Image 1 (cartoon, rainbow, N blue to C red):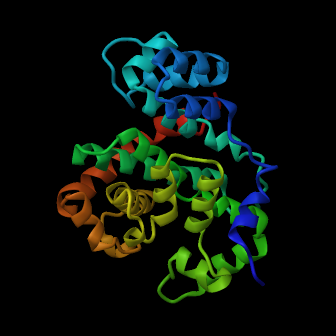
Image 2: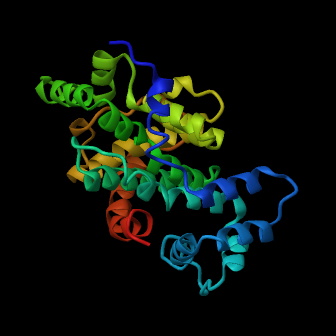
Length: 286
């Protein structure tokens, strides 16, 4: 069975659509002549997103000392590129609600995704060099290709899960996908990012989070998402032992300049403390 990734992704475009508010904001951010007032105007056209934005801006996620009660204030304080990331992060879960999936729990899928996003954001802050909000969104979306596979290729998706469960050493999911389909969920997610015209950094982080050597333009961001993915798994199963999870590519630590002995345990504890509020902010109802 030959499966074309491009056609596979195109097959979901009628079922899943990118929120209008993200499309508007993305267009404005890409325009060098736009202003913060243009962004605020675009946000204000979507009452649901406005509610989410103000909720996030006033949460411990940002920890601002004063109340942010207007869209224009939120935009000016948070920043235009970060608003774009938030527009995507706060609406992607609802966008995929209509995609049929009988193989995995959506609650479990989004919990892992949010844990990965929180870990990526925390690690990015530790580096002091990376846009933490953008990497948060990359972490949140890193496995989005799985939902397309489970929806459009459920038989193949089931084969993959059975192969993983039956393997003696718990074969990594992306290895099993390559054995069954010839490609993996990261490649599918990367193609979705291209078709939906995501910012290039998001596209590469999604596409290469299991293959960090392949990403040439944003190596640090990709490495952060790669590390965060494993830390999220550790947080889920409540372990601090790296032997309990898939290995982290040692190159990723060199790329980001962090010491695993200094950051892994602290990051696990941090994301476990933040997950409940973050789930309400990013995958809960507006």
